[in-house]
Image (cartoon, rainbow, N blue to C red; front, side, top):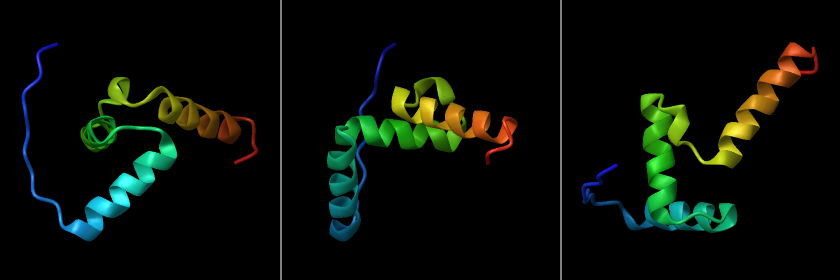
Length: 67
């Protein structure tokens, strides 16, 4: 799929938080921002595999009566 560039301004404190969080998750800023946008618009197929598995585990726990 073709990609286009998106430029945004982010306040330093928020960018620092984002970078710290993504570093802990082992994701690049691009991967993290794409995942956030995908989640926001409901495009679950574009979420990172870890996030998709986590959501499935939560749903399974609810179905099994553990949630």
